[in-house]
Amino acid sequence: LSAGGEPLSSAMCAACEAGWEQHALAMNASLADAGRAPSTAALNALMAMRLDASADGDDEQRQRGATSALDVFIRMRVSRVPPPDRDSAALATAAAGRRKETWSGLRNLLRRPWLRVPWNEATGSAAICALVEAGRLRAAAAAAATA
Image (cartoon, rainbow, N blue to C red):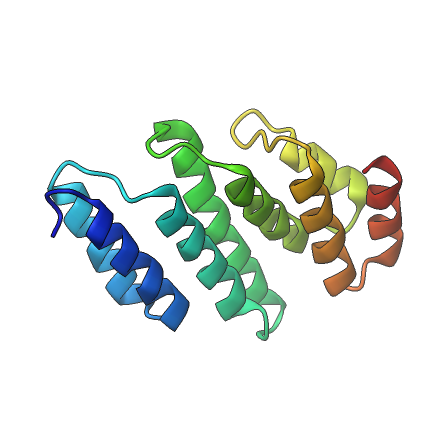
């Protein structure tokens, strides 16, 4: 399965959609052992699963989910295999939005050299949604004014 990489990446996506994190991580490890990398879609599914799994928890659980999703994005940026896409950037922005109280704090985090999330329609929408979901309406209004 790991010889081509694509079937295992597809299975990793399916495991993430089912909420089976340990299975997804095992598939990721199998790909790494074979010298392959999961697809961008598989890593996006992993980020989304971590954000969704922590959405209904308390503040500490939401912070952990956001941090683990950001970790996936940072690994994608550093290794460039696979390269992050617009969906990856939007998921990273949503994760970062859970960690910050203000628009200026979120904007500064997104500009950090180790993160550098590009600003576009997808990331703008993700930032506004994350801030509204967290009840930070002034920050969301400030983000909307720049979007």
